[in-house]
Amino acid sequence: MNGRLRLGLLALVTLSLAAIPFHPQTVSGQEASARYRVMVPDIQGLRGADKRFGERLADELRDLINQMDRHVPIEERELKDALKENGVDMEDLDCVLARQLAPIINAQVVFCGNYTPEGENFRVETKFIDSVGEEFPVETITVAARGQVEAANHIYSALQLQADQSTFSQFCGDYASSSQWEDAFNMCTRAIELNPNSVSSRYTLAMVYKNQDRLEEALAEFQQVLELDQLHEDAIQNAGYISALLGQDDEARAYYEQYLQLAPTNAIVRMNVAYQLAQAGDPLGAMQFIETGLEVDPDNVELLKQHGGFAFTAGAELSQGQEEIPPEAVELYRKALTSFSRVYDLEGAEMDVRHLQNMVAANIRLGDFQAAIDLSDQVLETHAGEPSLWSYYADALRRTDQVDEAIAALERVKELDPDYLNVFVRQGNWLLQEDRITDAVTVLQSAVDRGKQTADFVSDMLFTNAYQQGIQPEKWSHAIEVMRLAKQFDITDDMRQKVNFYLGYATLKDAIIRQEPGTKETAQATLPLFQEARRLLQSASGYAQKQNRENDRLGLIDNINTYIEIQEAIIKRGLEPALV
Image (cartoon, rainbow, N blue to C red; front, side, top):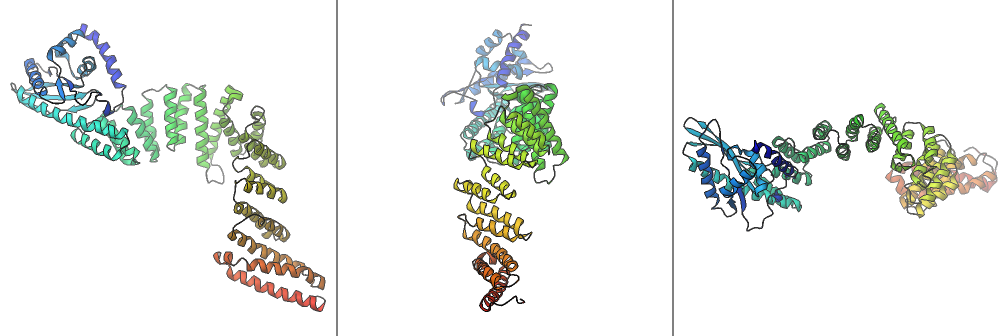
């Protein structure tokens, strides 16, 4: 009875040991000259086996261990005193109790096992366990009833291998902790060769693979660890994370479900798992893990924040590259809005501005622009100094054709943060779309002056406007005006030739219309235009050649030369209209 009462105390020690991560370098803090203390109890005789065999085997093994350089047996008397003090009988000392007792008597290595009668022989099954729970099984041996010496020598040989394995295992961990991956790999694989069931060495090898980006090999090794220890929390987490990185989303979620079973109601653990999934590229899975937690704790603000964030990210991923938002993304954005709205109800003005941004953005992506405007009006009352909120507000306003208000909102962004991403370019683009060309050029010049965009980029914006709003609809005066403005920036020769090619073309088309009805006055007015068109096209040979339009360029120049000859003839003769 007394022995059973003491088991509760010993169990607490085991729980403490179990909480220590499996790192081989923690096996011993002794100096190099110290010897590992080995606990050698009498192994258990099963099915009525003579207990004297276990006693004699233990005596023989202690004598052998005493000859080792790095190990020393705990004296039998010391062991028995510790057993007596803790109310445990030697005959009850199985592997579980032996491991529990080890830290109490400062044993770095525990020997334990049993023997079973097989006819006139004994079948001996034993193992060694180190101080962090690493097990080294001894190959089973069958000996005669008086074969304790033979069994002891067999076990002693295994301990020598275990000592080598422990050394390799320790170096495995030491090299890994200092990021010497190649050396760690060599030491870990040698340790595993000596003990294929080494949990710590396999786990460390898996981490070595992970840090070398050998993800498939790392996952296989973590799976090996879990075959040996199904409750190895770090291995479960890593297997889940790497599965997600490899795109094995279902497998990743299964691992994390397994991990969560260890603490199903712990919100912090759940959020950590979800974060890892999201970091590995599975925000949808992360959201689903948080969703399960919200079923248990629906008002947990931190869970709501994560749920909204992961739902928003998952929706954005599904929408990427799509002209229309797919139904699945719509549902995710609505989930994000529901969670964020609940947080806003609970936190009000204290809500993180990033979540407020996502609320407005979700409404915009759902096409509910008025809701985005109304929400922006509300949050800007308390967050008027947040340029990001003004930026989203501007976008929502523009979507409802309130362009002047949208441009004014971007002006507020510029006041609050002149370095805000693309604010000058966005404003310049909106002004271009409103045909406020001069204002647009001023804003775009500011973008170039501040180093926010290159001259070529903003020049190309103006060129695009000129092409789409001028050349394509054959509004030549608009094309000419805007392309001339595009050339005012300090652009590269390639960009200048591109603009010159189309500016020359637009100028030619405009001049052809203007030269009608072919009077002396129209000829005098359009001759300089034809000459300018020729100069522009002559300067664009490099662009035309790169775009395989050299024949077009030369054909246009020939056409221009003809018009120039005609205008010069009309001016010279002072004649009335002539057919061209």
